Amino acid sequence: MSKFVAVENVEKTFPLANGGSYVALKGIDLEIRKGEFISLIGHSGCGKSTLLNMVAGLDLPTDGVVLLEDEEVLKPGPDRMVVFQNYSLLPWMSVRQNIELAVNNVLAHLSVEERKDIVEQNIQMVGLGHAADKPPDQLSGGMKQRVAIARAFATKPKLMLLDEPFGALDALTRGNLQEKLMEICEENHVTTIMVTHDVDEAILLSDRIVMLTNGPESKIGQILEVDIPRPRKRMEVIEHPNYYSYRSELIYFLNQQKQIKKTASQKDDRRSASWSRKSEPRNWVCAVNGLRSVGDRQREGLFCPPRVR
Amino acid sequence: MTVAQPNTVAPVKKSRAANAKLKERIEDFAYPLIAIAVLLLLWQLFSSLPGATLPSPVRVVQETWVLIFWPFYDRGGTDKGLALQVFESLKRVAAGYTLAAIVGIGVGILVGLNKGMSKALDPIFQILRTVPPLAWVPIALAALQQNQPAALFVIFITSIWPILINTAVGVRQIPSDYNNVAKVLNLPKSEYFFKILFPAALPYIFTGLRISIGLAWLAIIAAEIVMTGVVGIGFFIWNAYQNGQTSEIILALVYIGLVGWLLDKLMAHIQTLILPTSQRQ
Ligand SMILES: Nc1ncnc2c1ncn2[C@@H]1O[C@H](COP(=O)(O)OP(=O)(O)O)[C@@H](O)[C@H]1O
Ligand SMILES: [Mg+2]
Image 1: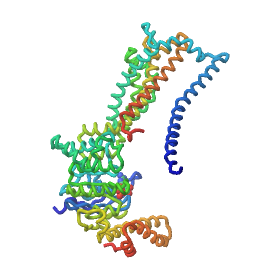
Image 2: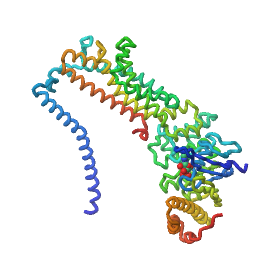
Image 3: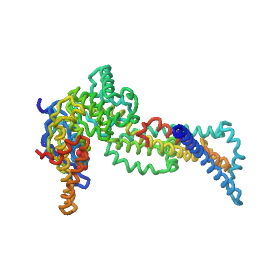
Image 4: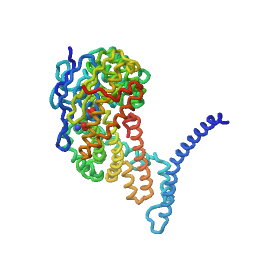
């Protein structure tokens, strides 16, 4: 029972239009326990969506396997629901019809009444009772994302896969939805993998945070265990004694990757090495700006970042 | 005074906005009317020059006022009012166009789903698409022997291509998001067809239908002109030409233009009724 999902030595190579190929991911090993909440974090283009799609079965690894309960994932299926970054609601159907399409197809073995109840329950769960008959075009971004989440949860999947679910939302809406998502995940005991680029979001929601290095040949650079008791509340999480060290560990990793990217591109430009040294302090300024809300006590510690394990 | 200001400013602003809108509306109507008036004036001027062959607008109205005021008269045979002539032509268009829509959408979906078929057939479609309606008339008459079915065939064959080609493109360009939803849900084929494929391709289908309604109208005029003895606006023009009634030809042209314009507006309206906002272009 210990490993629910296993990603074993996975590699993904994309053929390129010019005849060459691009190795996006290489040597990815990851085991996920049942009920765990995992975040994937890394710079844009490092292969987070690619990894998520392979777990979903929407794409196959060029090498290695993805196992779900010891069975190889070869095609997409309703036991692994995906919440896509751009919501992927069907604009010609109302909110209710969008959820019904999922429920009626995936839970076809249930009676009509039971399915109806599930649809209504999930509409209520995300607080969209008043908008159930509206088409997605008439909803705000946050409401659309709530529909997408309701659609995914309504089918009672074993595994939830979320690709930057709150990336396009304003801070307030994002905060509300993060808490809602946490609530729903805990209630349903669903195993979840979420792609994000938001450090605070990752800490708030995850049991473990998987950090990916830059491509090509991205691999898992580091895994951070978030040992904060559940149920979590945003304000309490921020007050937690470990919060700051988690946060700076993530930021340190991301900055380090950014640095590598920069030096790599500078080598391409045949620029002098001194330039990259000069730019170093700039990155720390960025990190401080990112942390300002957390408080002075925590800001101080930034200048002695924890070493990579 | 300063306290009252916000209260007085708001309504003034509002009525100003309303005024601007009203002005815009009036301009929308007035400008085209002015343009038409200027054109008519120029026409009147040029047709009164020595050696002019076409009648002036005033003479057109003088010579065709019976046709203008009695569009529904019926003296049997092909001697009917212009509304009835147009109605006959529209009936043919409706039949040929409906057939083209059914076959075009059906074949378009098949071609869109099948890459090999699409590669094989696309050049043929592109070539046939450019054959003008009038060029189809002799072959239609030779093959079908009779006026009525030949007219329908000409409408069908001219208007099917945009529907077919656009439908195929629409099916090929279904956003991968929608296909991913279908894949994750394991939608069965029929469910995929009616809930995803068809609605996702609908904007393209409508684009095709809208181009085609114009072509169908174009085709019927061409077809009827060649087919003697049928009731219809096309033959009406030809008949008028043979009798030297230029004014009647001009009046018929106005009818044809108006009907074509109305057909296009009708399709555009149906489009906005059916498509959700995010799918409209
Ligand atoms: N179908 C594809 N063909 C070629 N390259 C691709 C394809 N999909 C993704 N890539 C490349 O793989 C890398 C990882 O992409 P992606 O997983 O979308 O990154 P992320 O989600 O982390 O931003 C990127 O460099 C991207 O350009
Ligand atoms: Mg991505």
